[in-house]
Figure 1: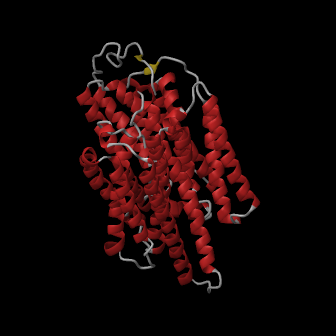
Figure 2: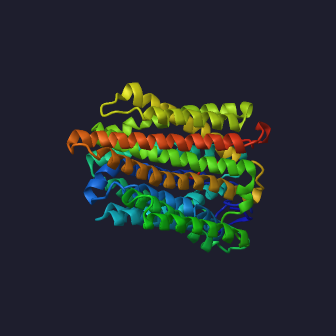
Figure 3: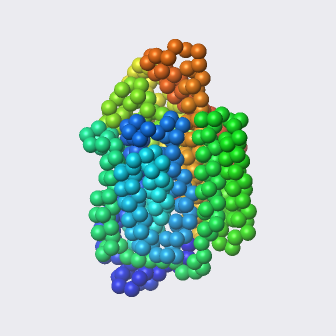
Length: 497
């Protein structure tokens, strides 16, 4: 998201042409923060509602992961394109269109009568979120030009990004238990309406000058490739890894992703300039981010089902029981910010991966009646601490040595890798889970006790594979990242999801 910024006429002091701060910038910040909260919490609010939605719409265990992955795939795959559209089409216009589209997609999901309709709505939410999130971030840089004020604005934005998942878990629990799972989606409509009503008069328009060509082929091909991979993983759960359909979709996904690389190499305006990821440190950071996202996103999904299906927690109880992860993130994020200038990014990232892997291995010890206080609580806190110690340095490492005109793409790429890793990981772990459950039931008497034991066995297998992915992320960091602590830029990149 680079280029010279200009503002629309009649937007006093909104851009760089006058240098004066916008008089209503703090109110505009509140509007932008609300939009960011809506995008972030939608990644977790549906988790708590998923058991009820699955039962209501008759979604199979193999396909239920599409409620999560349809959103994260569309969001991650289209995020870089959304940033360029916002820059050159107009950030305010993109922001409002993204908000309207997000609300309409939420309405479609809330009124869904089938699993396929819900999956489509979630994909649309992700696509419009990919317009909304980078436009909101870019608007902050335009509205707040003074260093101290910009730091405060980004602190608010970052707090929303970090705390949004906790709000999503709680709100999802409240709405599912006291209203209906559909309100986890429908609640976005009044929120979006209020934000739009305030954004139109308060938020200034701005855009970047320069070539406005978009790498639409790149965006379409990379998203199609990722969808094909996830669908291949899903078919593996249904038909087996050696099935023709499974192998065909996975092969198609690999070919499409290879085609994406060719498109980016030949494009004059690539969606992802490959020079960003070919740097050893940044490439290692992005690969580690993808692997950690793959290991963790699926874990959150299976914890939700374990709480509600096995331990019989009510939706609100399940939301509250998931909060220790957020507490761990907050504890570690503060410590990581203080430690990084002293020890550097690499030790923190490796240590974070170790903590997260230990937590995941601890979760493989769950049983049909595991105590929350003695095992689940400490495991989740440690898992959150591992996440915090990893992603704080990652956000800075992603910007090491990046020229100013690539900074927006580099930061957005980091966020995209988390979403894409989460999408692929959720699909992969769900496949391992369903296969493990089916294998456990072979030769055993079909009764309610055995069924619950099979579910727990499936969760254990999923957590073990999640731990393996996180360990692999730590190895990648250890081998590829060679950056010195003095090379890390001051201040962290702000994530968009």
